[in-house]
Image (tube, rainbow, N blue to C red):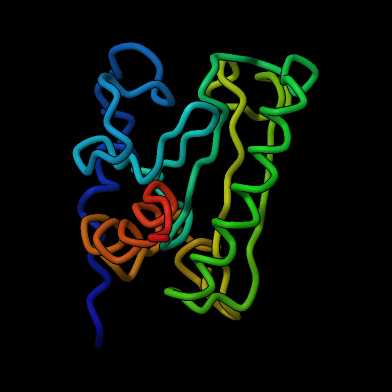
Length: 168
C-alpha cells in the first residue's frame, strides 16, 4: 500500500486557513519572485503564483498586477499580457510536469464560484489520465504527489528566465 501525503492541505480541508493580510495576488514588496508567498513571477502587468491549496500538482494562479474584479476593466496591454502569460505557463507546466491536459478557468464573481472575487485571476490546473481517483469521488479529497516547495523549486528557474533579458 502506498501512503498519499499532502500535509499542507489539512488546514484548508478543515477550514482553518489563516486570513491573508491584503490581497493574495498582491504580495508585499517588489521582488519578481518570492518562495514564501509562492510567487513565481511578477512584472509590471502580471503575477503568477503557485496555488497553496492546489486541485492538482502544479496548479497555478495567473492574475493582472492591478487589483481588478472583471475582464472588462483590463487595459488592452493587461489583457495581452495575461493571455501571453497563460500560454507561457502552459509551456512551462508541459516541460516539467508532462500533463495530459490543462484546465484553464476564470470565475467572475462569487455567484460564479470565485473564491477571491475582488481580484480577477485564472486557474491553470494540470491534468493526467486518472489523476482524480476514488479519493475525490468517495471522500472529496484530492491527492497531490509532490510537495509545494519541490514544485516551486522546479518551476522557478523558468519564470526567472522570463525576467532576465537575453544576452546580446
